[in-house]
Length: 201
Image (cartoon, rainbow, N blue to C red):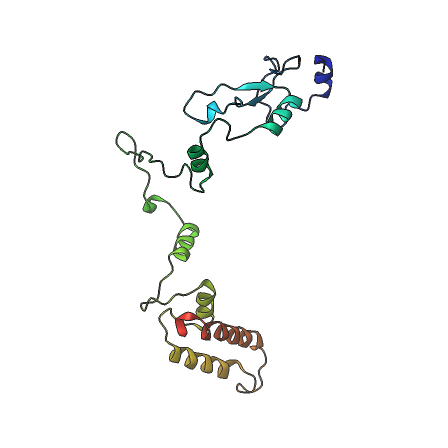
């Protein structure tokens, strides 16, 4: 491959992975194209504690290098097993961020939140739990809101509230007024959600 052909076929400067400025030649023997793509040494030295010594290739030769590259080359069986663990690298201790000599981050009270955008999201994540410890899903909480009930309501109060709302919204019980049909459907759906929920089992 000649240098002229490489210049002609060269992708745009924004081609993904292009790092070099073209000043280095491709390290593939016999290739005079610029080495614009960086690759690790074939023995994997840069993956351990040694300083990284990169190789530089043209586009065609970095593709060939990647096709034959072996991440585990030069590693022992124990190193390979450690690298394949799902949490590899996460157990390393890191130094805690120190505040001495630097300003402390601002407290939540220092933020202005006139539209309650931050506060509402925070409260949604820290929604009140039942005192009996029974779980409430997001669907359960939405259903309780539809029925106008708190998180600690019991099964009996749930049934009583449901019966009261059905009497209020059902056209057979409110003089034939059908304007509350959507509200009635929401109440029925909320009750169906809650009566099978673990919190009311």
